[in-house]
Image (cartoon, rainbow, N blue to C red; front, side):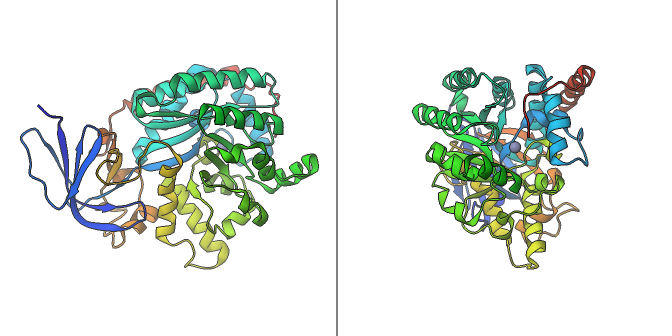
Length: 432
Ligand SMILES: [Zn+2]
């Protein structure tokens, strides 16, 4: 007997460019899309999912987050970025343990799956526990174990990252690992160069934060006589596949430093929430390889890439006083570009592609009548519109319901939070 085939019949397909097809049938077999056609004969072993009046798109990608920080969602509100880091988040983070990390990651993954996220890029410590959560939940995860330069023991941290990468990179087609220096303001140029060398010799990429605020550029110029982007460029990190969190303040003269296989994860809600003055990226996205991230829930409060894309488009239109800027297709392409930044081969709805996609129901009060499905998705949708979410052919959400035990996940997260609050804030060697 052959593998079970699943037919998704009668759906209109939204591709990576934002073009929309007429009604088609998508055939999934063994985790892969094996056919896309106007009709398919149903075989006795087939499962048929009626997708009349539905839309299918590749899954959403969240290209920059810190999933365990879901435990800190709402803990530091209405504070300056300085207080957010130094008085709230880092002191609490200094007290959390591997089990906290795991519980936070599980909470984050269940939230992301609900929104239709099929792959995410994470940046955090105790990363092996995040790997466990990805494997257990079925989501695809690109994980960068966070390395801080100023906390001491950098070489030991780097060796531990290399060991984890060796052990788990590529596991079950669900995991990809890369080097995760935190940023040029918490790691020295030498440490960044060590990460670049290590990534190149292991054949993996890297992921770090660069220039979410102008203050970082001023400080770096004072210290190194170079901008943070120049420091990163000289380190060699841009020669490996690189995810750059933010680049919100990338200067016009720095744009030429960005190389092929470098990707920028914009996290608009975080900048707005922390009162970051609008950066040049906002005024002129140009041809930069922009993708969408959410950052951690401690600053963004939610891990919904569609919401981040929405805010980016709205803020851009408002700032420029121009409704024609950042049109729907451009914003949709930002959402989809994250697939190119990750090594999973996802993001296409053509035969031979991994069966990672979302079946959207736009016939709901918040999105109907859906004249323009891209407008419905970007400006009106939320988790309820993601009716089925499929990763490698497996339903992780079906008929609007997650397969995970969310009650238990929330209970566990709240229990971990009680423990963290009992321990209270610790001291940290980090300074923002
Ligand atoms: Zn971040």
